Image (cartoon, rainbow, N blue to C red; front, side, top):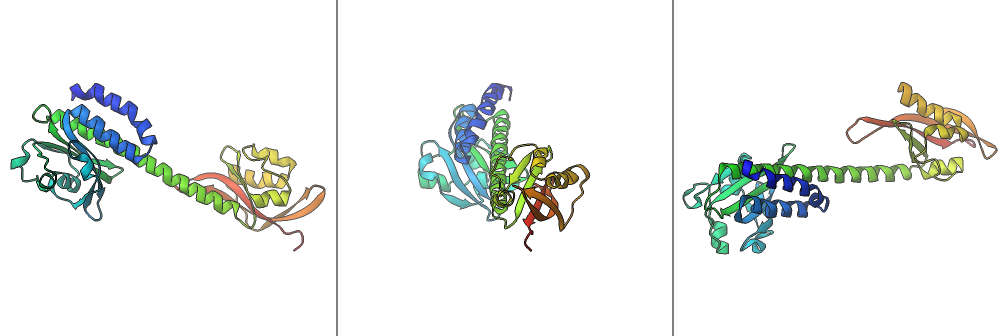
Length: 284
């Protein structure tokens, strides 16, 4: 393993930049860099569908690598056993191993002599299997197996985080769209007291633009002191109210505002701020 430390360190340094480009780039980086670190002639990454117990060639390099991308098959062979057991495997004599199946070799004309297969698992989820084939040195070592396992784990971790970030971004965009399309006004602040939401209806009711966004909530005092008080009560005392009213002057005209105050929660359920939902009920 000590022979691989410097190369693994370089792999780790370059991984974030590749993952930032997307999953395709991350898995490509894993197989190409992994093949170089282990010193082998071919490598593949199989995407796993654990529910259907199927593997699909997502990335493959080597003499016939390009012909294999997109091919799917049920859990079988070394890669299938690795996916099923979620354990790293080292097979130095593929021809005599009961785990090895030569179906891909027969179809491609490639000859597999030895294999290292490692699961790519993150947060308990099997993302796929990385397989390294035909060591240039004639056989793979236990150090190669450990190195491959570490590379796959690092890539899986970064891809999993990337997927989470994309999911959170989609949820945030959906939430923002919902807030912007509310029939009532909504003003929200984060736990630091910075205004993070000021939807179009709020702008209409108070006859202002977006100038209060990203400003301290206390700056709303000039607009309407009761809004500051309502948000402050939630932030400081966790005190929320339902169906209350206050009056404030908007450009010299008094308006009656019906409102409720709430805690704002993130996708994980944790409180991330406070807000007020309100309507102009002056003429009701």
